Picture (cartoon, rainbow, N blue to C red):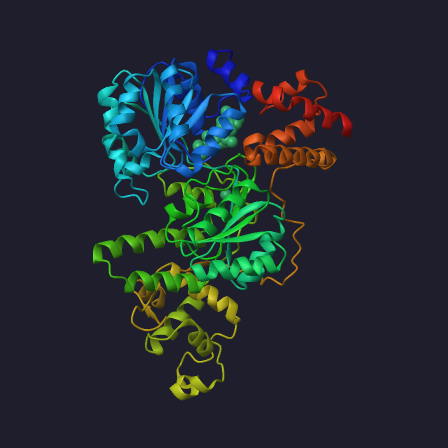
Amino acid sequence: MSSPAHELLKRVFGYDAFRGNQQAIVEHVTAGNDALVLMPTGGGKSLCYQVPALLREGCGIVVSPLIALMQDQVEALRQVGVRAEFLNSTLDAETAGRVERELLDGSLDLLYVAPERLLTGRFLSLLERSRIALFAIDEAHCVSQWGHDFRPEYRQLTVLHERWPQVPRIALTATADPPTQREIAERLDLAQAEHFISSFDRPNIRYTVVQKDNARRQLLDFLRGHRGEAGIVYCMSRRKVEETADMLRGEGLDALPYHAGLPAEVRAANQRRFLREDGVVMCATIAFGMGIDKPDVRFVAHTDLPKSMEGYYQETGRAGRDGEPAEAWLCYGLGDVVLLKQMIEQGEAGEERKHLERAKLDHLLGYCESMQCRRQVLLAGFGETYPRPCGNCDNCLTPPDAWDATIPAQKALSCVYRSGQRFGVGHLIDILRGSDSERIRQLGHDTLSTFGIGKELDSRNWRGVFRQLVAASLLQVDPEAHGGLRLTDASRDVLKGRRQVMMRREPPATRGERDRSSTPRTGVAVQPQDLALFNALRDLRAELAREQNVPAFVIFHDSTLRNIAEQRPTSLDALGRVGGIGGSKLSRYGQRLVEIVREQG
Ligand code: ADP
Ligand code: ZN
């Protein structure tokens, strides 16, 4: 166990063991070989190049497109005593000059550079005169033309291999799908490199899908279980972002809006508060998130249906990077399905593209309506087989009730047919339930044979039936008529009694103050007897962060504070053995931590 890599992991970073593939990757790269690393968000990619850079002679050059993040990454490294710097357009000429001299002197361990900077003739010639430990290419999927993060400069990074064939390269990404992976290998000339592919499972994230019935109430109920915790609430539109942030502030939450329509200064300020302070809830469109590597995001809530499974996985992946329990919560209803289906059908895209978009949406709907373990469905979408039900999703924790809905489905489909295949759900339910309304009488729908044949279900349950019929493509949304529903080819089998339809029973309606004591709280699990000490340690952390003007999490993670609160080390020696405390942090903060532990006895 005590290889030089382990010794360094403990001494510098304070960790006892490598996770997953880390050790194999570290050994491979330290020995001078190239690697392509696919690891989910929070998997621990950074150590895969940081440790080899420290073990090898010279400076590790890290190419990263995320300028906004470089500063925090470098700060976190300095906190553990690593000589790290960054070079990008935000630095003044004097500072940049100093950093360049340090690179030449050999007094840097790691240097983060933006790709456009790296590719300048000036910087490349600087590299010619320096000792380089390795090249790390972070967010390597930016080389892919098909992804939404495409960065043309990434295509030119092959120059590194051409000019420094003996320097190992390690490319890293959290983007899962096999075509992107092939493109990265090809474009970055890494086909010969060893590929390290981790499972994309995020075991600490609990997945839950709820059916929308009172979206605002449901969101508040969900957030009540996360008081004081940082999280993201995704909304479909800018307007809804603003409304949701206002509503949450009105309820006493520290909520902020983020979308592309806000002035750049406001966006930057809100993002900064989210990163630096504890417990901010960010209400955002999907414009928010790329490169947010705050480790203690405790939940990601979607108040509308996302557009695809990949997007959903990426967005929810921002929760729980620190490996502590986190929640991914999705609230969706029939309206979302109708809207997204309409958007596809009315879109300008060609037939081939529409076909693809329909398939993507169906995949996501399959996930939402599934009665199986959510994790199994999610991972199957990325070509991975999860061997057994996970025990950490809503379907595993409270298995849904399945019921034979063949007869209601027949009634619903036949009602669509008899009324001319152009009405929306509200009206169809009125017919089925035999409502006595002006519109029904005007249209003569009280004379249809399906009028009043569905009194056995209330309208909420009928909505559930229609939603599941649309999700299963037994009904389709008419792109011409406003939200009108039509039969599909598959409807016939149901109407003729040749196909059974099983559905998920709708859960009881939410009634405001629901008892949450049955739902275990997530968040960093601190034992009640350790809570006072944990909170005192958090206060110290906040103070240290303010003194140095850095985010709290670069000083200590919540999990490190919890370890201290549990183990109560009263000497520096004992503190040094706590997970998450390396040599540099021990000498900087050890004394003050130990004092607090002693005070709290
Ligand atoms: P990624 O870049 O893959 O999203 P990071 O490199 O930011 O992930 O690591 C995620 C978190 O896990 C970080 O807070 C990091 O300190 C922690 N971590 C990584 N490797 C280990 C390890 N071997 N032991 C304990 N914590 C680790
Ligand atoms: Zn499960």
